[in-house]
Image 1 (cartoon, rainbow, N blue to C red):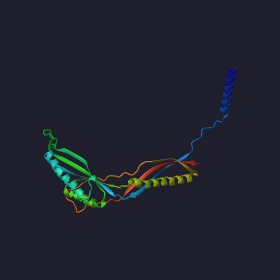
Image 2 (cartoon, one colour):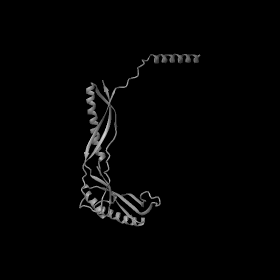
Image 3 (cartoon, rainbow, N blue to C red):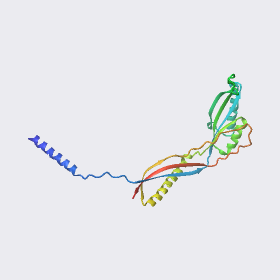
Image 4 (tube, rainbow, N blue to C red):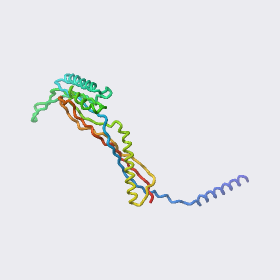
Length: 242
């Protein structure tokens, strides 16, 4: 008897719950709100305060041993001159070394003569960080004077570029917001909350064109650091109220 009453009570409760669920109002899926997306650019000019130079020595001789010995002596003199100019050891790093044969190739398509080795070329290069740009000209001069016959480029660097880029980011957001307000006013809508912000692109220093230098040098190599552009591009999406 007890079991029958309990089962009946459970069935009644289930029926009431089902009826309550069926009685709830069914809402249509909420339509997505319209959005406005715009890009902004922030750019600042900064004066470089450091430079990276790639200096080296190329030597040639009939044998690899002779070319290497001459190169070792010359590059050692270049490194010593760099240090005498105030460059710290931590700012001098070997960045390239090669030993290659030099060939004589037959002229006028002469098939009777095969290419033959006539000597060897040895290249040793160092990358040097110059922290005081006022000394850059004299550093280059000293390097060439003591034997460097290859300067592969100068790359000027803004040491606090990451910090300076934060200024550009603020300008980029301001630029995107300014444009968005113009479009919103023209369209007769109001900007609402920001839906998303993404950053695309930033500052990247461009290396200077490679150049060769002869052993003769002027009292000081004229060098101008100029200014570099640090820029950030952002894309911002706002919800809008019509």
